[in-house]
Image (tube, rainbow, N blue to C red; front, side, top):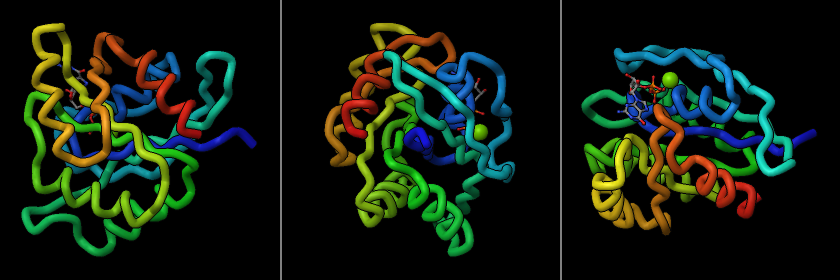
Length: 162
Ligand code: GDP
Ligand code: MG
């Protein structure tokens, strides 16, 4: 079976938009309202001649106290079932407590993680992505899931990590 790539992150950062961009069709539901729980679904995709299965983990509900226990279990299951993880962060917002909570969970998983700094719609926003080095996950890849900027470099990095 092709390797499984899980797309994770707090609500509204653009996970489903990224999944649709990579798959090349509107398969994942893009939500303007955060926090709507959805089942994990895998979609076949390929890049640079390699096939993989992309899993949109939309629906991680994170309340003011952080990630609750049931959500943490769901998140951990998605990550455990994956061979590699793309963590999506909103570069316009920077690092939130919820992002930091997810990073802790990802560290425990021991899965390779590639960091996507999303919503970098124009080159002048690329400097915003640099603060995401602070997550300790290495290089943030600036992308615009909406417009398709940078997603090739991101996928190159992901395939190299598999
Ligand atoms: P998810 O909750 O992480 O799956 O986020 P969605 O994919 O549902 O997107 C949440 C909102 O962010 C929607 O209004 C998207 O159109 C918007 N969005 C996603 N990617 C980008 C991007 O690269 N740039 C901008 N400006 N908006 C984006
Ligand atoms: Mg979503």
